[in-house]
Image (cartoon, rainbow, N blue to C red; front, side, top):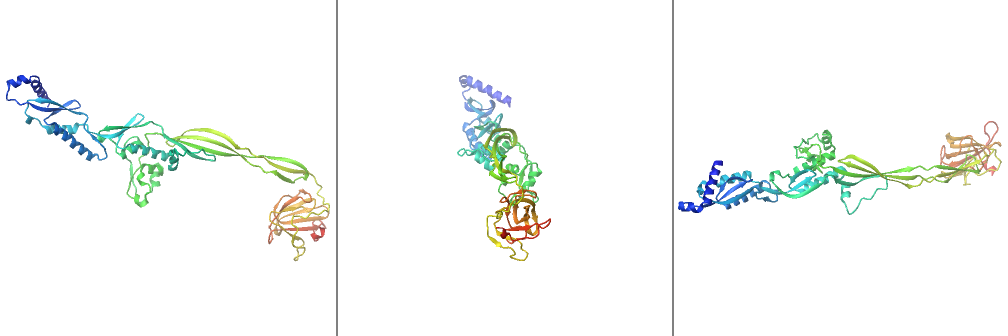
Length: 471
């Protein structure tokens, strides 16, 4: 072939260089216009008809458009050129079809595309939107759908947290991503599926797949391949919203995720801590020792710590405390406590044991009732009837919660069916001092105060006079 081309070249040079002399020497020779075809600056042959070549190119572009229907524009080959020349060779010796077949094999037909540059890596894709959409999917995978929507909503900036909790406040791709229009060989242009895999894996490598069968679930398949269910759905977006029956027989991609880009997410974490209040005591010599009164309730304070946590592809990369402040000061509890010491001996000035003076069941209102029942509500204060020493304070059978006081002057008093107790055995009390709250404990048909006065006729109180006789 090379010898033939060289021969043609020599003949052509002789004819074109000595055109007039040859014509004179061979008056019957015919001069023909032909086109020398070059591919990448190498001669592949001669053709006789330029229009035939141009029609061939149009037809080739149509065929490529059918083969690659997604490509928008198929461009004429850039590595083919035709040069016109004159030859004395008979046209019948030139095989146009053979040359065009060579052009079909070696010509660089190109299609419109997009060149994606990610740092030093480049690849050509059919649809650049697939790249941006896949990047958004990755960011949503690492933050969550709702969080990425908030982050992308520029018109409504994310407000800083002022209570305990955390939220994503930023997401970005670390690498520089650049998109340019380009032309490339159709078989070098990545399809949307290949483009998505390139972003997710860094290369369009073969898939590792599994068939969803009757024993499968998305969670089981994900767990069996060392990934989360969310990662499995990221790799197989077509399964979103499908019922179990619709997944049967579906081939799922279980290739481990290995993004060619780094998604950096930023999370804000706020911790609200309690600053405990302290208790202050104020002594009061007008109050009986052991008696207390809350002058001011305590209130805890609060402090705030704000932390910024940065993750790279889901793994923590850094942590920084960006703010620490006290939100409120604690308010100390103030308790007044009595210091007055009383003898514990009754003086005979009997104090009514509660604020209500209504008697609902009098002395012996039924057999064995050696007391009076005073109307009361649950929680109503109960007072010591006179100075004395608490003999017992606790729960006892039918009495429920009750208190027995020895007034050391021959009398005892009992306060029964209480809701709560404010004194303990051994405490010295003063007449009128709060010792508990009325209630409905023990053998009681409703909230009231059972009140007894008894005399000491031995080691224990025995005879019980009518309490009303003492008022």
